[in-house]
Image (cartoon, rainbow, N blue to C red; front, side):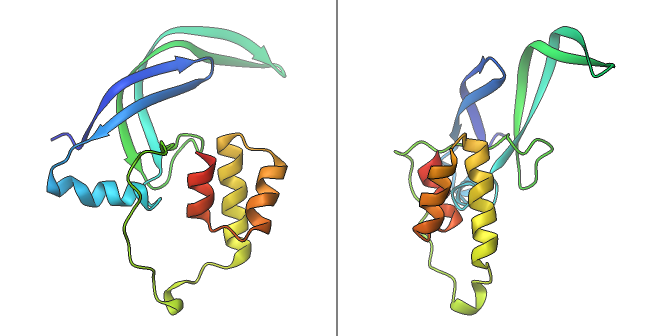
Length: 148
């Protein structure tokens, strides 16, 4: 049973992107809410390789897929490739959640800053963007929305 479908997909150089539409069925909403909340923020792509480039780097043989076809996209909380993430469009619905009570808000500023730095690396943001988010006291969810 499909929770979502890929509306379009493209590979541009070394980066692949896809436009994914989630089902509007009520049983899919908890998955969508986990995506919006950043719990499910990574993807894994199943693909077949049609053409490889065979090179040598530092004396080691390196095979690189240069022509490949994606077949499926899965949602994951922890990825094999940290760069494989959801990137939200601004017109998408924001999550409607109740803030956690103070005792449940255990994330320290250092942890938040580390996550903001990770978000920036993945989104291709520079140090000045990172500094602005951290100096402004942004939480990781706010920084994620700003980055993507």
